[in-house]
Image (cartoon, rainbow, N blue to C red; front, side, top):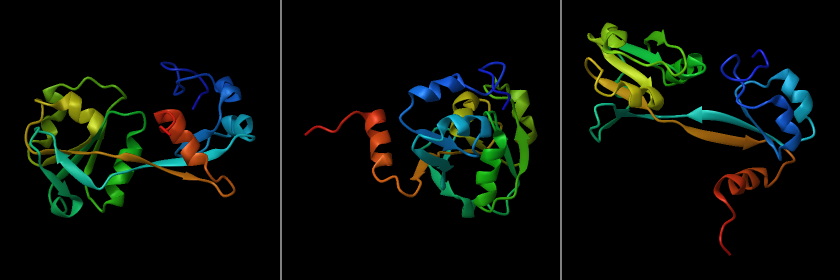
Length: 170
């Protein structure tokens, strides 16, 4: 990134806040300028993983990537880095046409009209915004964070979860 805060850059907080941190969770690649400040902190890598799609139309239906293969697929992503979502779909061995949108895009029906002859795939974030706008069949891919602590850092994941969820009752 450019080291600036939103909306001028990708950071949600100043880099200097790392001096107050207990640990650093890296989502994707490490940022070299930040890595220097974080060198003394415990490190955790995070990736997003998803396997099953849910119907955007609100029905309680799910499907796996195997039932989507061989169909005409279009993928949209209006997130900070749409390439990550598209990479996740490729990891599921899906062949699709990419349609990236800016982060926080306000979708209109016309934005999705290209997908009328196929199946539209999207993030959960986009599914919320696209409800009622989808021209045909559409699926969202729920993801969850998968954390992995580096060697020599036993208990780090538990410490992070405790910070997020609060201390478990005795």
